[in-house]
Amino acid sequence: MAVYTEVGDEELKQFAANYDIGEFLSCKGIAEGIENSNFALTTATGNFILTLYEKRVDPDDLPFFLGLMDHLAEAGIPCPTPVHGKDGDALRSLCGRPAAIVTFLSGMWPRRATPGHCQEVGRALAEMHLAGSNFKMSRINALSVKDWRPLLARSKDHADEVAPGLAKELAAELDALEKGWPEGLPSGVIHADLFPDNVFFRDGRLTGMIDFYFACTDMFAYDLAICLNAWCFETDLSFNVTKARRMLTAYRKVRDFSTDELAALPLLARGSAMRFLLTRLYDWLNTPKGAMVTPKDPQEYLAKLRFHQSVKGPADYGLD
Amino acid sequence: MAVYTEVGDEELKQFAANYDIGEFLSCKGIAEGIENSNFALTTATGNFILTLYEKRVDPDDLPFFLGLMDHLAEAGIPCPTPVHGKDGDALRSLCGRPAAIVTFLSGMWPRRATPGHCQEVGRALAEMHLAGSNFKMSRINALSVKDWRPLLARSKDHADEVAPGLAKELAAELDALEKGWPEGLPSGVIHADLFPDNVFFRDGRLTGMIDFYFACTDMFAYDLAICLNAWCFETDLSFNVTKARRMLTAYRKVRDFSTDELAALPLLARGSAMRFLLTRLYDWLNTPKGAMVTPKDPQEYLAKLRFHQSVKGPADYGLD
Image (cartoon, rainbow over all chains, first blue to last red; front, side, top):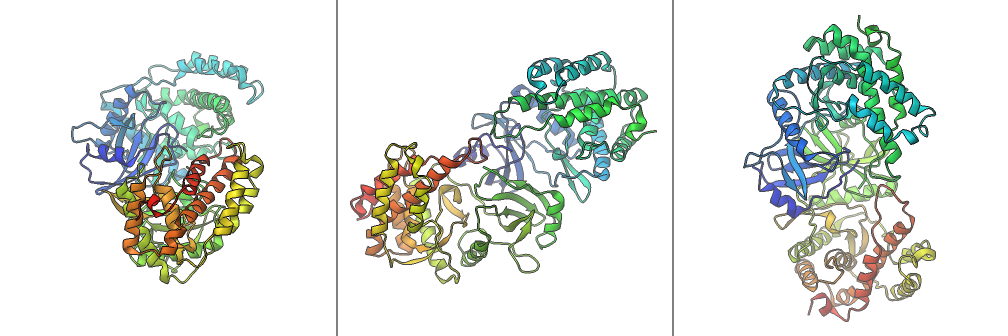
């Protein structure tokens, strides 16, 4: 949890003058969030989220992210809507950082995901994929298969400190992923980071998807693979096939996937596990003790990777 | 900044059933605050603050703190009002911690205090002192003159690491404070921690005073002395006599202080500087590197202490 940049009352007052959303009444840093500084902003017209984009976000990507949220919100997807200033711009600058205000979404993220939550996520993900299909901009996935070997190279000398033989195991897995990585599957805008803390619910209904700052243009089935990893494992790292079935079935009711996509799912799930394993491994080895953000244990994604390596076919994901 | 206890969606839903303030729509941890975990809570009826009291707060003190806020709010003081549950109780339990919901106050705390802010603080402090005079409960100040020597004892072996000769200087100052500490001055409920980050403003008008978790029964002039230290020094630690004059003059318009109180002010200001110096010194020496909370530099209060030692009379605080 982190707020990297403090926003003072005077800076905020000046910033407020750019908008038509009423007097700014309160602005409090939110403890959640890792990449950027987020603030709960209350104005005379309601609640909003103010985000200051920190160094991990490339400013050149911001028009894509904000444009995507505009596009998806317009299409009825429950995502934050950028608030445009009096000059029409959603993206401006505050305290030396790129900054934007987006609408506030109600709901709480689920600490214990249920099969019902997974079903909602499957449906909403498919709706998002369809809604994004006519979005004009594109963004290369900066954390896809071609990026994993350089990422591993930065950690491999110390990887075995996390698990004996890990460097070798990951190198072999990378060979397989690079060799078998599918091409030509249906692609478009994907969220690429739809973890439980990015999805809000009220009374079991999905009310919001947030944090589009890894969104990119990639295979839809890869987004689904990320969600399988993020939502369908229990805390003891066993795979819950009921959750997977509910998620995949709900997804395909909205956007049916082809037999090619279904066949690729185990490999995509391995790739997704590799992607989060590698970033967590790097952060685990390189985050100074006592940093503002506690790194997540890479072991979790090693277990998930090994599960998907063992998958024989769609039945292991709960499909016929 | 810190949220020590995470509140899950399921725990929150159960907790919400105790209240009549509408469906709980959102609950986000706030990065500000050091002692307790605070959350920006949005319900169908508006915004609130949810606080979980952490280990530094004695649960036995909570009825005093919450009762005081009830009392002051009733008297029109702009402070958070505890929200009572359906059973009438404001204090209950959440995630194993004592917990309470209070009303949300608009405004921002000033990063750069102006003489105008100081005037507002003086007025509001006096109004709070008057409003608290018929509050029935009392609480001993756990960080007053008799507590400072034991507090120094816990730091003195390492005090000179902060400033050469500091242990000896503070011991001598303590002798003077213990010997000269006034008795019989007008007393009642004081805030005891009214720093700029505990006071909200809108357009230069004070809109809220928060964080009553050091409030206690002590001399009113000591509260004023704390505010002199917290509000009237510049960032270069020079004393701004204009700010002091505006604060004291605004205070005495609401509750005039006696010549005894005025005469005691320099010593009380030294005592107040000692109190914050000692707790900061202890935290400075004992907070592990990389803790969630960054300790504040005790040197700041050493400089303030020395200023008040040099004070010759009321004119140094801007009074005739």
